Length: 361
Ligand code: NCD
Ligand code: ZN
Image 1 (tube, rainbow, N blue to C red):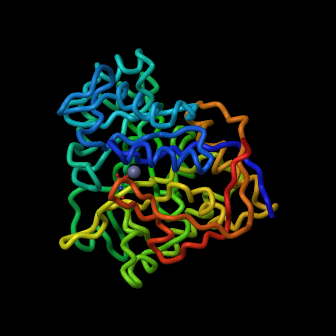
Image 2: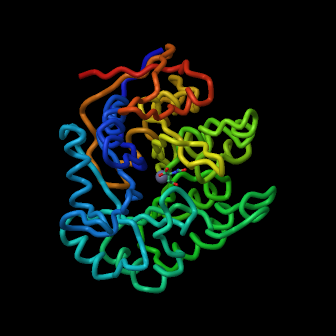
């Protein structure tokens, strides 16, 4: 069984900096990516639009140029969202939009995930004119939808968790106060989020990662498979089924691929674990596995992987193609200098993928 698809966009991924950057960009090109949305949680973070990088902040202009060079200009589209902080102003949004460099802004819950300590609570931007400016200027809001500073059962409990809370208490209010704001709910993991996005206006969409379509918290806990530790955490099977239902529904165009691939060279430490799964090289194969790709659901798969995302971001569909075949494929971990980034599937001790990917150029 073989399927040929247009090259796709990964509309949520982490490429970092220094020697990790070329290696991770190349792994995205190798899995048939036409373009990327590269998250701004670098060190320092991308909190300004134009000009040169400094020691305390990076700019969209400079980081984009680095990403482009690392991909030898083979990526047709590179979006870098602006990292929202207390310092972000409405004027920065209007000027950024005018410059053409600013397409979206990323909300990070303060201290909620890897390199998110510069974020401020969402209320800040609802009240200080930043979201209003984004709504007016047509700038997309990328939301990491978890309530910050929750603990114990409130953070991850049987009946609620940080994401669940955020999609009940925060995102509906944002969508109501700023009805024309385009919102991309990133890496959703719960039935609550999937249901909210499905019933919201066309301005509200969501990305879904391969790991959240394939795995649950049981897979993380049995054997403590820490390579599956990412945020938001994998949840329960009811949630996974809701995500799968949303992703495979041909009737909607709101859900699309955003792998959240995040390279970590040090995952587990003596006092905790770095959040992020690395799915460079293997993401379309994992999405195909999650869909149980067949003639029957090929259209839904193509919508999810290749069409819905570029439609929302107003990006062209690539005329280059790649092929997925139901045939086993294995990859080595990325070796960069003396460091190693473990592929999610290798970290789960299941190196043989059930789909293989080849490029047609
Ligand atoms: C991401 C990272 O490592 O940069 N980690 C993750 O668990 N997904 C940050 C993020 O998107 O939360
Ligand atoms: Zn991310």
